[in-house]
Length: 146
Image 1 (spheres, helix red, strand yellow):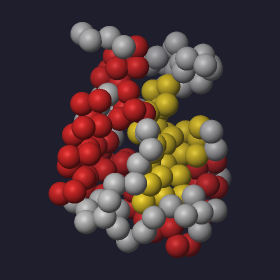
Image 2 (cartoon, rainbow, N blue to C red):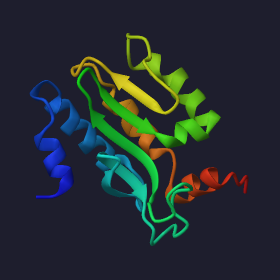
Image 3 (spheres, rainbow, N blue to C red):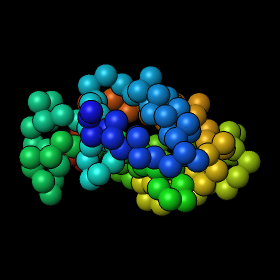
């Protein structure tokens, strides 16, 4: 059994259906070229080393992280590195969120937290995930403006 399946098997029942739906939505909307693997103990969508051999800045042998998802004790988390690095994407998400949710946005620098498993804006997350290609993410990560 893969590490990702092992992770999913250990997700608390309260979160499992929503976590599986979230993963399915991301799988359906993420642009081609990203791959899923375990990174830092959670399922993550990364730019593989075959595409970006420079890897992640602090661990050159580690694929460049993009999106990770986690089922924590008190919430489901979506870690989106693109929103951390791209102010325009973050601003879009913050403006769009109230059109999908009545609750206040619960977010850190790159982490969106959902504390109610029945109130996750899957359509919005799908749209967010689709906004950056592998090439876009590498360009933003490298700080290029071309």
